[in-house]
Length: 502
Ligand code: MN
Figure 1: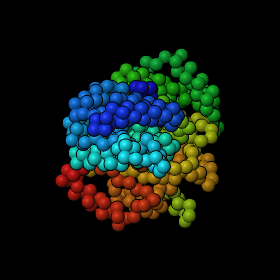
Figure 2: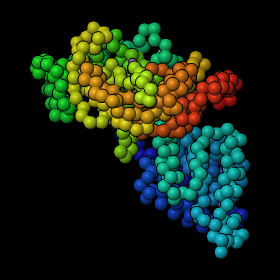
Figure 3: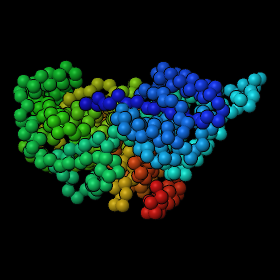
Figure 4: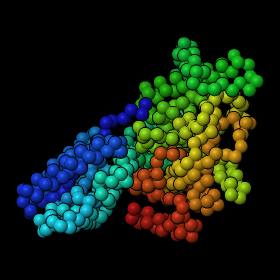
């Protein structure tokens, strides 16, 4: 499901012919060494491709247009080894439409004090040339990432790696298609939004299907296929009968297995990568899709509850951005439920009715069947677990009527003090930065939803860079947040977006 294109990033070095061929030979040699070392670092998630040194207006324009046309190219990394007069870059930059990284670096780490002469200075003057280039990108108001530091340092390579994931999110955003099974939950505001504007801004296609059309696809799944998946569940997860009859329990689980297969076939056939459901509009489905949705999220599908297509698309996007990450800790749909307000132990218990992605689980994952206490269907089977600890990011995309805002909160995930044996859902527990009090106050002032797209494997910087590339407002809530500053920021953003200064 999460199989994606074999994306590559082009490495384009800027120079000019003022210093002669010998200098240009060195420039090409240096950039080839750098690309080779970057690829061998084992840190970058995608390959870097060396391109011939860019010297002229025509070459620059042609290269950027080739990058636009190459569907495997997810972005261009630029660096001015010597000096490259920036008017040469105007036409190319104007026509370029993909993510842009300005790597502000230098081939040599240290000034060669004993041997340095003017030839060396002319050849190695990124401090000079990168300012000329940076000026024109700023003057043209082009959104780009600037990363500064020695190219062979692990920290710089990790920042490039992180930006590459953002860039792939930017490129892949326009391939996200969300299937709405039934409509938004009646009367709920924050999960609503302008689907036309979402397609203009993010490239998302958001379509509705009558619930019984997908229910028919579920009913068409054979018993043999269903039983085989039930066997897989029973071999993979702990079974918590809690006094229920084992055969009756298994029949409940089989309903979810049939939904998983039916939904996945329907989504694949119609080319959707995210889905929303609504507990109040289930047509002929026998249970609210619980375990089934949890498994689909684990496979890489986006999901939002109660018709929340914005969060479903965000979960899918964040799964794309973390694809193939080594030691990934997981990405999920999530919902703020209930607080612990004990001083020193403050936090938010996170869960959903059923649909939390098992990629975030720590320890055993079990199947339970319990009444839903909402809606009118039979007790749905669901996966139950607790989640990993550590830093993570929770995001909420809201529609303010005249624009979208992405709220990004750094959170610290913790273990709850005690087990919660009577709670029949998967959970996480976190304290938002800078504290529960300020974090939640800021979240509410910013208009954030109860639903979030959550990941241990992405940073606020990555999510904010994605929002900037989409041309929408990003509000960060982190260790530096204070309410007075945040209120001013929201007020100023209001003016900036009204004047279209974004
Ligand atoms: Mn919900």
